[in-house]
Image 1 (cartoon, rainbow, N blue to C red):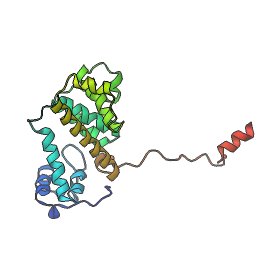
Image 2: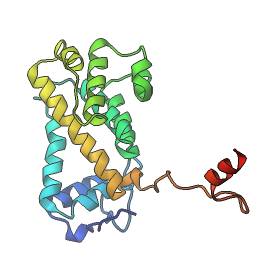
Image 3: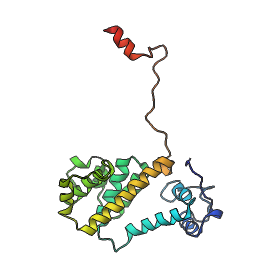
Image 4: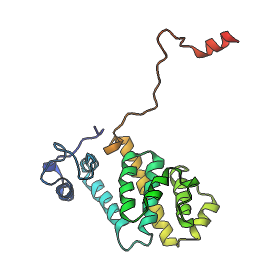
Length: 212
């Protein structure tokens, strides 16, 4: 379950209520969760807890889909897809696998995103935006000149700024989904201690010292 309260349909503010109806029809998404794409849909119900945050974020979706954007949808989706994978958000990754196909990225490119640096299916500009994405997400914005120069060889200033903003926005969404356990990111941390067999020495170093 999400870590924060979900807002039922009868308490939702106007924009949230409109989107609830688009996504869930006549159902209350808190009582009867589930969207057509198979997600629980609790991203919407949790974000509705702060109406102006909800509206601001939905405005961000409209921003990146606006036909005025100069960055190509395929490059944009490469950044969003890689950001979801690199940040470890199953929700963002899964949703943008579908979105990437919708804008025309091949199945080969979608599948290769995990190990893009050794894949030969990407064009020079695609490799540049993927290298830049890794710098944004995995290096917290620490971008070597060589990476930025490769990006600038293919994209103008407007395209770079749009790509940077959209990719960083989805890095944020991936982080928030994991922190709040939303959608497919409602999972326990896999890094836990595995118990030693019953009766085994609990002091491994002591055993090593004794062997020496």
